[in-house]
Image 1: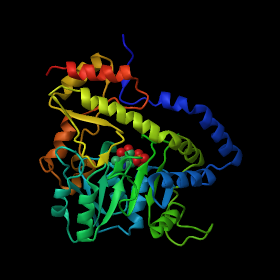
Image 2: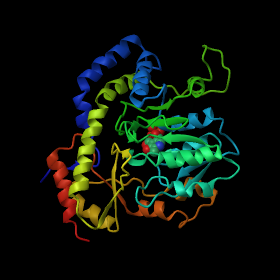
Image 3: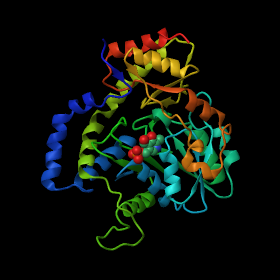
Length: 368
Ligand SMILES: Cc1ncc(COP(=O)(O)O)c(C=O)c1O
């Protein structure tokens, strides 16, 4: 029996940095720097340098990052924000938690990213912003969305939760809109030892607002100038991210090499791959394919000890949580097709060449 190949395995990566990690954790412990503090500040400096932005603000998770970005833009009750229907639900939470309404649009049939040609029809006098999602680690068509935002005077926010280090037109994402929101959930390409998130921006005004909002609406202790939140990043999380950030570019390169092999060697006509526009460099947070024969393929792969994932089986507009918005089946055919036919093949930097070969062989061997 061959070893199981999961969709994602964190064990090996965590082991590879364990000694370094524990030695920095000891410093956090000895300094009692558990909430915000110097280890978070160092990570913020490192991460803004990595993204090529002026500022980064660490928070307690990626959902918070989106929520605070909306508040920093002044978005609230009565406002609408356009987002893709095919994303992890947290993109929509960010809008809803701010009191505004998410307005969904369909995705492109080949790239599966937000379809810029569908955005203008969704704009109303209430629209304040578009959140584009770099889904699966691949940048959306930023210039096309930017042009629409400029024309209609809308804010652009990047949901970069899945895309730490991805490139668009030769530049790392994170500085293309007003703000970019990251998740450092443990399973992300850059994942903390704990829950964490962050926001990058080139605008000092947003930066200052975010610092205040995440910290009880306060910049001077016990003086509260606005209603705020406790949404700080923890010191242990900040320290763990400092360490992992040093390895991220290498880990992303390895994922790119695995993806290149998948793209080159997967020949099964029953499997469709995500289109890769020439001006994007994905970090392959997920390697999603579609197939008309999903159930059969999952069963076949499972029999060969390969365990793909599903990201995501229900598009946002059809989630029960948003039933009151009145969307119906058939409204966003591309997002609905993707949800019904997607499959995430194993993808993590520590996969061996032999494991990559086993996945390719199994996918190619499947007969519908
Ligand atoms: C696209 C997207 N947006 C937002 C989030 C939310 O991040 P978090 O889980 O850190 O709250 C995620 C995380 O899974 C995500 O994939």
